[in-house]
Structures are given as C-alpha cells and as structure tokens.
Image (cartoon, rainbow, N blue to C red; front, side, top):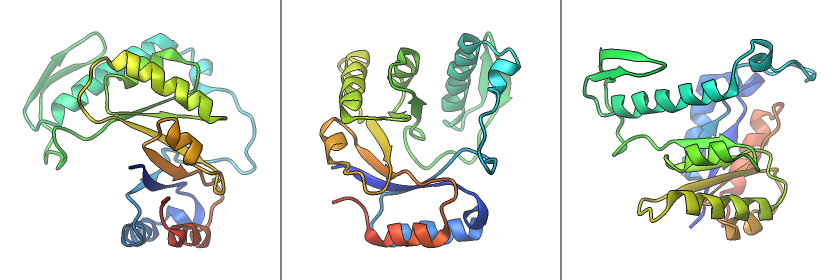
Amino acid sequence: MTRSALWLPLFDGLADPVVAARLAGEAEAAGWHGFFVWDRLSWPAPVRQVADPWITLAAVDRLRGQMLDEAMLVLTTAWSGEPVHHRGEQYTIDGIRFLPRPVQRPRVPVWVAGYPGRIRPLRRAAHHDGYFPIDLEHPDQLAEIVATLTDLRGPATTPYDVAVALPPGVDPEPYIKAGATWWMPDLPPEATVDEVRGLLREGPYK
C-alpha cells in the first residue's frame, strides 16, 4: 500500500505552529498517513538565483558527506537512550544521553534525499530507511533509482520507503508502479492555509 502525506512550506500563514498543529490533526482525521514540513527557515521573495553558500564557503562536498555519515552514526546511537561515547574523524562525544528516547523502535526512520543520477546519496540511503528523490521528472527515473537501491541494499529484510513529491494534479500511479511507497503533493512556497485545507479535504491517494 502506498501511503500519502502532506508536505508543507512553513511560510506566511503556515508559519504559525498552532495552525500547523491544527492542520496535522485535520489531516489525521481525513485519513492522511503523515504530516511533514519543509526544512527551510526562509525563502526570498521574489526568489532569485543566489550563490551556493557551500561553494562560497569553500566547503568540500566529500568532507560534508563524511560529516553527515558520522553524525548519523552518532545520532542513531544516541536514540538508544544510553550514554554515547564516540571518537571519530569529525566528532568526539563523551557520555551524552538523548532523553526521552524516541517512541519508534528500533529508531526514528531516516530518509536520505538526493538528486537523480547521483550515486553517493543512494549509497548513503541504502544504509538507512528510505530515499526521497528531489526534482523527479519521470517515473522511469524512479524505477532506475529503485533498482539501484535494491542492488545496494542486497538481501535486506527490513521495510524500506521511497517517497515522491509531485505537483497537485499529477497522477501518482506511474510512480507507485515504479516503486514509490509514499506520495506527497508538492506545494509551492506561497501556499496558503486555505489551499492546504482544500487539498487536505480531498483526502489521501486511493
């Protein structure tokens, strides 16, 4: 079964946490399976092309990836609720505990995002719980991604998710056939509360 979630930009009217909480409750009551939010704190208006801050700051892509991988190791260990002692190339942790422990077991699911055609995010995703491809243009791209993930994961027995965000009105069925397990309407940054409520009331994909 493919599950459906709302994925909201938290700007303007949607930036109020009370509004977001109410929408989450309404989404659950309407049968949606998840309620996710963007990871951006700001969005220029009008949106202009700007310098990539990672390039401007001379950040090394491979080093960033190594830092992320090690940070995920520390985080997933911390979710156990036990003291964490870690000495790695990027981080040193001595006796820190993460409490309260997450309700989910064995841990909070981790989805890795990445652009089609890039193998490193897929390799990283194969070690976690799901993959969220960015800027998909065609279901064939997703089918190729799913095949690569299947090869990378090997004879895995744990559930695995592949999430897709598609503009409202785009039929998710071809993407579901290609391997998507989650579908989310891809809303623009200027989406309003009324627009979200209208989409919410239409209910999840069936």
